[in-house]
Image 1 (cartoon, rainbow, N blue to C red):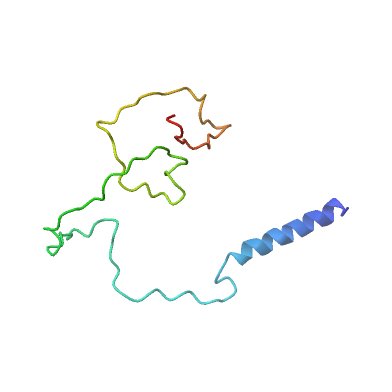
Image 2 (image 1 turned 60 degrees about the vertical axis):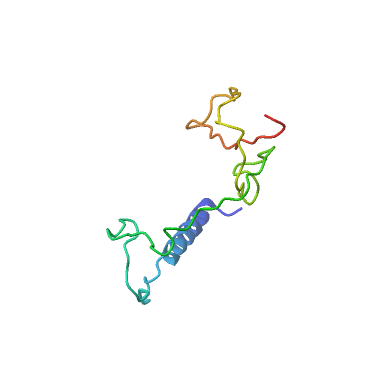
Length: 119
């Protein structure tokens, strides 16, 4: 086993190398050239959004609703595509149960709800 002082020196050198590796232009490198083109502010909306007149009269067509018996994982299926699900009427809660305390600073609740076998 290495003596503590040697280990501490190696740890400091390794940490310094890792920190310097994150600096792209630390040793005289050139900054990346920005991409050419017009910059459009997409977060603020730009103020001049308008409907596309070519598609305003098109009908929205949905596929035939599918009956879904199970919801095996969060998001439905692995591809997260549940498509157009059928409902027999207004949706309402039919049952609930207490699953415990939930998330706090010491224990994070990571389990995702699933539905299978009518539960």
